Length: 113
Length: 111
Image (cartoon, each protein chain N blue to C red):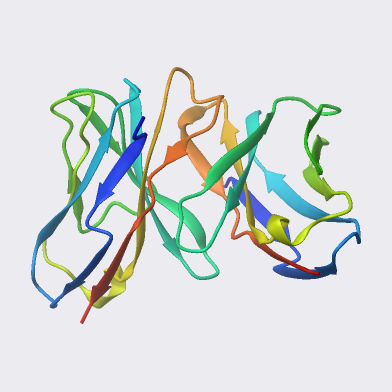
């Protein structure tokens, strides 16, 4: 029972590079989301999806793209990395109406130099 | 604007010394208030959902309560393994796809 799997765990990028953070869940959850966590600021929602083919923006979507072609996968793409995107990124999933909490992945620590 | 504020930012307790963490919120129509525990280098782990004022939930040494403006996480006779960051989040009726998280309280329990 893997839950939510994120890869990679650590990544260093140069300014301007692009990359994709991977997220997969095996719980058949409809809802998936991406958060970033910065010191003193709490978790902030980047993008979310309520099902395959449906995505929407969260609080801080600029510089990020998402797509959801299957129920299981929800990758996050950084189009042109900037130092301000240095953060820890978490993918989370939930079933139904989200009242039973999220299941979070273990995170990706990204550094942009 | 929906907001969540947690206090204190950090709390140091001796083993067995009970205390409470606070989560104050401003939201237009609370649908749910959530508590999570986060260990260093890991993702948050779900603890409780509270739905309405007056509700209480318990799990081992933790008890969460809810009023119309705030929630408390009471820790009774804590142990060193309770050391973690505790996060609070709210979900509103007008957009239950979005959760708003506080910045957390870092709890350190010394033996």
